[in-house]
Image (cartoon, rainbow over all chains, first blue to last red; front, side):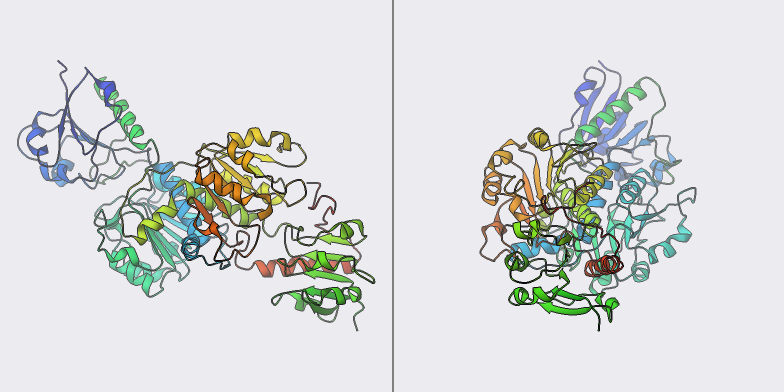
Length: 315
Length: 315
């Protein structure tokens, strides 16, 4: 019998785990059983990244897993002071979502510049209405969040001829610090939110900041819903403080059919899918198996989250 | 009084012509008066590029303008054997539309890869439905038409990480000849039509060629409507020979409200706007004024169309 117990918090089948057959005892938990089963687990794999069960189960009674991996870029759904203070190592899915999310942001920028939502609307109404659209080359973007996702977004926007500024927590070469955010947002045609959700970033896109943006500017959030004060965004759109917005993440997900956000003029709503390209679950599974093999061999893990900061730091 | 008469075939006001005040006698014509006024014109500016009036007025009686400029990239709407055989020089708006059309094609490619049309549809129905989308990096495009527009499209798709093949009339470095089209189309994820409309290209995208494409492939036409056999495209879409298509140009424009094309599943319809970014009329006006100043000074014109071929050649 394998010595190691891997507990998987999952909502749906997990590919690639078959590779570990015979090398690990795999057990499963859901939100209701996690707290009970945690003390018997050496490793916890948070496959269901929409669940907040880990946060609620910590610290709990008995031994805790020595390693927790989440199949997501953000760790806000599992992090809590007790876990942060513990010896447990937390890793994330850094790398899997960078390129897909960067492409998704480019898709939104171009769709808004070329007025595609209106094109679809007119097509549905069988109306031929010629419009002038915008060039994206030569416009200016402010990307907030200087991790691998933010950096991939910068790269893809630059490839379209867009002048970009990247804003992160710590100023360094190629990254502006938080003190410059207001100035950069005020002159941007595109403001892209790709920051991790932490105490410092919670609600950072608020009425004051939307009020600062150019009336022709657009806002895109592919980070976490709680980065944005949704009411303030709705107000900014309805009062034409800004020209448009696209949200792929929301304070409460999934968005219910009664949410007023579905029908805000100038707002594109998508169901938290920006990073999820065909094969993503496979990639996440492969990534975990690779990390597990390092852990099993006693090698240092990659993608280790700075638990105080709430993201993988140092890049 | 100025010696030179400039006749403008126009449907709407033309910016930037004020710069020529006092240097040229400007007269105006529409489709019904063009034939009568043509004999008094030294230069004809075809500002209304949707009109076929020039073709119908040629050769006509009396002297013809020595120079005809069209504020469009294509010259198919004005070219006829008599004009082609004459001494009249024809110039076009080469250069103005390259970058905008390239961005528009990138917008369509990304919108289709990221399933944005369905996202809009679901938003309208207030449905949260997560889907997996496609990565564009690593996919393969075949761009047909090796003029400046086709080359700009290649550049913008390459910037997205797409592997591209360019097909033109004459094989040369970086350009495949027509003999390779079938092979390249058969392996492409994206087939982009940006060719000029000539005898050789009329109806080139037909049932045989759509039948050759991959079931997962998409077709985009930003060239001329007549390059495509529309019925064949509709059949290819309805039988799932290909996964999707976007048409910005049509055999008959504007598309009437009764056209069946508006409602073909998997087809994006836009009103011939791919190259028309804010300020485009200004750019077209400025370009004509610059050409006029060269002509006035006896310098050789730029953007001279090879009238036999139907486009500016030699690049």
